[in-house]
Image (cartoon, rainbow, N blue to C red; front, top):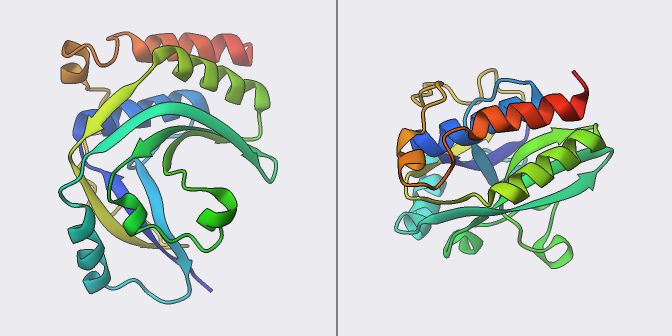
Length: 189
């Protein structure tokens, strides 16, 4: 049986491009949109009325994407950037990871994989970068597991463009080259 989730997708083109490019560098896999899961899994379908109700609670909020963290889960190592948002807790519901047991830790995964060495390299790289991004452009999207295309109608440019973030000195212009070099040294290739 398929499960329903609610994703918060980052629609800021530059932030999405930067984070998806970093994810691709460390995982070797092309990434669709950058998102965090805020609700689910559920057996019932999430309706557009539900999405609109939850979006109204957070639509005036900003997301602060910063602080690198890591954890292991079922043999997988996860490296992530934390997401802070004032209203996010009011719409949060993850039955498999209840807040009272696991805490409230909204995040965007940059690396998910079995290789601990690569996860450590990714973690150290992101920690040294001290990325801190303020995002005002996002949307809530329902997702059903086993869905053919997780992000149909994707309008985010797939280039490595984040010139404004670089011009504002929020990230260094050569961040992807340096991430690539770290990954290459770490993997021994």
